[in-house]
Length: 474
Image (cartoon, rainbow, N blue to C red; front, top):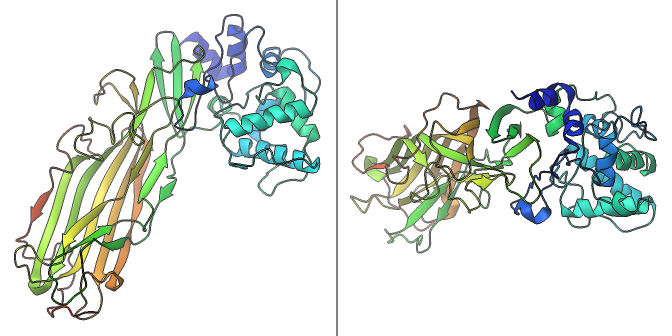
């Protein structure tokens, strides 16, 4: 560990920044949206660069050793008091700027909204409201607040530091929002003070003279659909007694929503801060593999079809460059940090309404059983990723068990109202690093390695035998 990083971990970010202040480059940017960070001048949430002649809030933090008005003690406004991040900001330990996120940002947004409402002025956040994301709209609201409370010139910088936090504490109406807990203590963990969260997992990366500590702030999924799934009749599938042609698709999750989706909630501490309008040397992205799967269909007269797979790499197409879930430059592919990667999947399977060999035995039930593994990795940008040169920040496993049954004697498979769904999916093992699941880096690919068997003699779903009667128009 370098002396600077060691100082940062033990004494806090501002001690390091004061040490570097005479030579530091302007701040590093985190962009919580897919918009390129360069468009916004690279602003690190909670860590603006502190340079001679810097902004109002930067200077206030750089001169932390001086006794400034209101620089001692705690916040007094009950809607801010006791929040670890806001108290740290008031005590010159961190800043809030473009890309910051979380409950503390939401409290700042709520406070500014109430401040302008009390003055009879228009809402400063008309588009996104109080969403806990410090984006362009919030930055404009901060500038407006700073101007409103009398800041001038470089003081109006759109950054929340001690001086702006002091004004928020004094000027915002003191009504306590329901989610404020005045009993919270200030952060004691150096990572929490630096990243704005207490990370669940950490990876330290070095490039030339820069050290970056990545942390995962939250491992929950933005969307995780535990519903029973749904069936969809494909075009041309007609519920007529004489019709033996058509296809029904079966999907996990509910219609119109992915089975799972998440945007990686990554934070970092980087020293020294890189120059403005520069990208970082790192990329982050998701890998997904299919550990095992059995998708099977039951037809009249004890006829079955199974589609099985095992230990295969999963990606949107078999053309996606290994090991990623999607190609770089696409929404679900690897992203140049500080843009965060996203993964999204809805497993599904389609079966003919009659058995492909007999062409007269009708579809009666379907099952989807599978286990998926997901990893979030960090790679050196421009370097081909391999299992040994990337860092595994976190891993998850997902188990899926869905069943679909055609209800009613003689019901036709093309009658969508006759399909009922059961089962669900669940998150299994998760945690820091690689975990113990089998990693499939390149091949086989799930879309080309599946085994289709139309000669199965027993029900792969272990369900009761389907009815033998022919479908009627119902």
